[in-house]
Image (tube, rainbow, N blue to C red; front, side, top):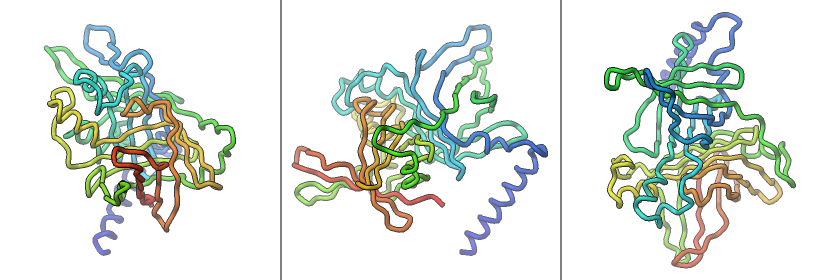
Length: 316
C-alpha cells in the first residue's frame, strides 16, 4: 500500500507539472485528444519526392484515447484478402498481416506538442514506445514520426486522423443502454470449454488485452498471448506467421447494448481476421463487482460444441 501511495503521489506531481506547462486558459492537449479518431491516410514523406500513400487511398483504422490514459490503435488497408489466416496460402497469410494493432498507455507533452504511446501489446513482436509530433486543428489530427535520413535525404511518416462523431444507434437499441458496459476494461482471463469438459486458454495462462466501450458508441478490442514467436510478420517463417495470427485478436467498430437480454452487439468495421470484417459480433455479459464476463454464443468445433468465457476488469 505504501508503494502504491508513493506511485500515486509521483503521478499526481507529474500531472501537475504537465498542467503547469499549459498556458492559462488553454485546454491541455491530452483533453483535446480524448475520443475516437478515424484513419484518413498514412503517407511517407521523403525529401524531394511527392508523398507516397502506404495503406491505399481509403484505409481502415481507428485511434482511441481514453480519459484514463489508455490508447488503442488499428490501421489496415481496405483491400486485404478475405481469408482466414489459419487457412490462407503462405503468400496470402503474409498479406493478411498488413494490420497495425497495439494498445497501452499514452503521455502528452504540451511544451513539445508530442505524444508517447507506451505499448503493452502489439501485433508485431518487439515494438516499444513510439513518439509522435501532434498537429491538431479542429476535427483533424496529424501525427508525425521523427525524421530519419535515408540515402542522405530526410524521411518521415505522416498519419492523418479525423474525429469520429457519436455512432448512430441501430434499430431496436437505445443510446442510453450503452452506459451499461461503457468504460475501459483490462483482460483477466480468456478460456474455452469443449464439449468433453476440457478447458483451453486460447491466449495462454497470462493473456493481456484491452476492451474500450466508449459512451459515444465506438469500441475496440485487442488480446495477445505474450508467449508468441519473436519475429516480424514480413520475415517470419510460415509456422511463426500463423502462430502470430493465432496469438493476437483485434477488431474495432461500433456497438449497441440490450440490457433486457444482457447482449452486446459489436458492428465490426475491421478485424485482424478479415473474414469477420463487417460482421456483427455478439457477446452476452454479466457483472460481478468490477469484473465483466463476456460470452459469445456457443460455437460448434471439431470436438463438438464449445463455450468461451472472457473475463475483464474495469479500469479505475
